[in-house]
Length: 356
Image (cartoon, rainbow, N blue to C red; front, side, top):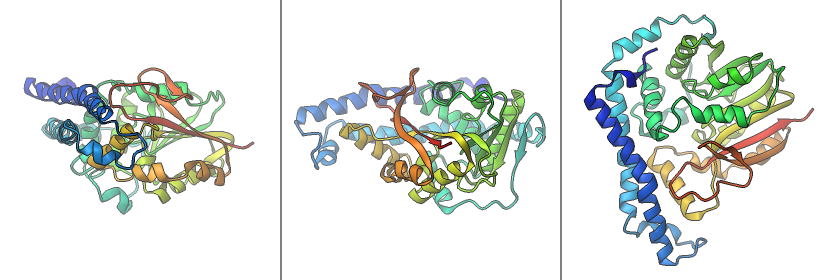
């Protein structure tokens, strides 16, 4: 498989490095300055005027503008690098058979929900579903979004190894909203005896996921389907998982996805979603919500306002809980995120179990 980064010209590399540096300084320099300025105002954290005060801080225009601008610069750099190599990349995808070590199952005329197509999610032009190249663009761009700390998909491997249950006799594991497969591939090592299935709405992501899995010799089935109605059998899965997918759905779709996951689980099976959750720090949480709005992710608020605990329990699941997740190296943190000076995504895990 072609890795775009191995083909970058000197100018392309310089552009990527500039955007990465800008994003890092936004996180570790501009955000702490915003926090310090807010502290100097003496405004109580619980104040209803918190956002108004934040918007009036000297560093706020820099914080808000730089976040949006560097995101747009990111996609411009990634898009230029990918589209300029379109013929090679399309040829690479076309050369991979649908049936190999694993399989690819696309549906002719598959209808995408309007809430999925109405936005250029992450400010990525055309979003993730519109063109075969959109998956390559997102894969490349996501490395910069994660400040190069997720190269090799460290976060997803950490999630699989530290959060998902040990089930040596597992026969089927399903990854909801699998994208280009970064969250699915670690499941093969975690559950070597199981059939591993990745489900997603977007054909471009599934094509790239399948091609990369085949290149690594991983037996994964990638299927185009809605996570609200996968078409898989009742009580057929030992583990249902998903990463960064619930926050990109409206509330009713979140609940339907949870219900579908519960339907798929065998008795004793477990469901785990790596997601985002409010931290309890009002200023940080205000910036998280505004991040979603500046990043064209309109359903963050829907996730935060949905009673996911109740949805799991109503679907017949038990031991339901949210736990903080430290993406740096620690994984699940039952006591919260701890003190962190830089701006960071508030990773968290929603976990539940199907009663025996």
